[in-house]
Image 1 (cartoon, rainbow, N blue to C red):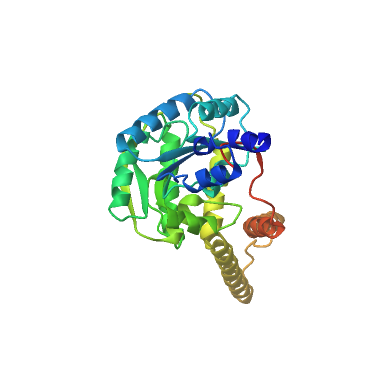
Image 2 (cartoon, rainbow, N blue to C red):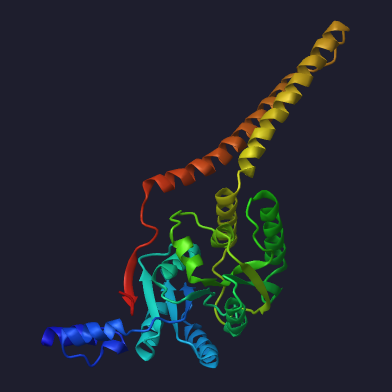
Length: 342
């Protein structure tokens, strides 16, 4: 009896009060899964988690639906884990996990998708740049029959002109060089139906670009326009280095265009060489003494060709490196601690 009471005490509210294993199992059977799961990756966001919970709670209260908030601590160095544990103690609809180290935003989202129970799943940043108040619009579109409802950024408050310009160029480039239709000016803020989530969970690739994966799976998709707010607290963790790495993952994951560039460069240099050979033969035939074979010209030509070769090898190396990561088949992430998650 003591053992079963100890087990029950560790379970959600629906289990509490059960005195026997039969009662505990019956309580588990009547546990109602939430309609909506909200996933927010967390990395050094302790100052804003209370505000995130309060705003999500207010929105869900207005909708009158069952819900859960899944907070994934992606190797935070502050007290984010303590905040998550405290929120779970206050409201067991808040569930959390702490990854063993920083695996990156895309992997943290994947960890949340693996444990989400809702019929629809909403991805949003924990820094409140994606306002929870947009969720009712997404739910309305979902109820109209759409499987994916993504947020389209009309304005981006608190961001530098460089980040806005580079993001705009990136999305337009992706549309031109990839085979998937990724909507312009969108982020990871979106609602996905359960069947979309299950489709994405089948994909185990390591260098993930979730916006591309969601577009790749298809289904019926639409967008809602919103104004992206400035961060509630703290500073952005998305550094220039991470932006470049993110862009490389996106391009190599959904396009062969870089490899095609290497191929085109090879043909271009071969064509230039063929023309140069013809020009040299003609000059020799007509007795020209043009100084085409000086040491400086030779050195420049060798360095130029060597640079082209190294660029092509680098492009091929990016793809091979990603293949190597896939072959190793390591786990996408490791969990150190959980709150409300088996």
